[in-house]
Length: 227
Image 1: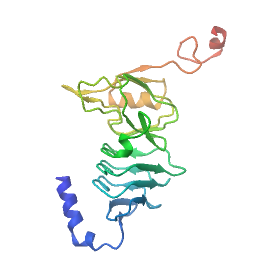
Image 2 (image 1 turned 180 degrees about the vertical axis):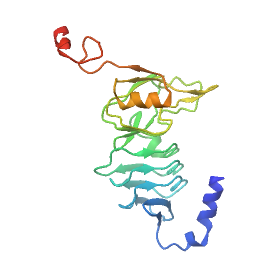
Image 3 (image 1 turned 45 degrees about the vertical axis):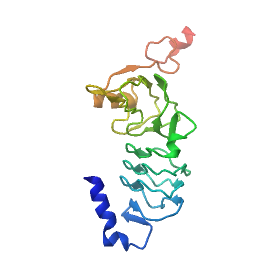
Image 4 (image 1 turned 30 degrees about the vertical axis):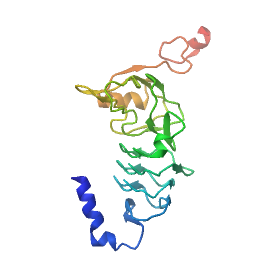
């Protein structure tokens, strides 16, 4: 299993004798062996590997810089003291894998139902059946809407703005019933969200375009006359 492979990797002589706290392979941070409670991801790292910090019981704060592009699956899962994740200037869209921050105080205590990092929507943790994603976000993380509870009424309709350009795998997945369940996705015609839904075979409906007062699917002088 992957966990067993990780355990073997961490136990080998190369790992134990490594002189640095950050274990790197090129620009990928594979693992962290330090004991600091405040961690700054090295400036030359663009990827944090799956499980790189998983189960770390020391770190309380993580600072990331604009070079970072991807945070792997379960990268910080079960870091039970992780209270702060801070994105530096220039951190925008991130490719974030499922459970990247699962079971961390940062995720659980985030002061909004929409948990974000940079301009990436990491997780929706509210209970509304309709969610309109604000147009300040540019990416959605993997399983951002996953509830894991097939009795849930969370997010049965999600409206996606034009600004979202990056969609991680299964970013709208809600839960398993007999088959996987997804919300009704409301998109703007010609948007990246529409293209994503088509490519993934997801059901979607159209939202009226901003300024489309007469709801004909176009913005034109006729809308001004209608108003």
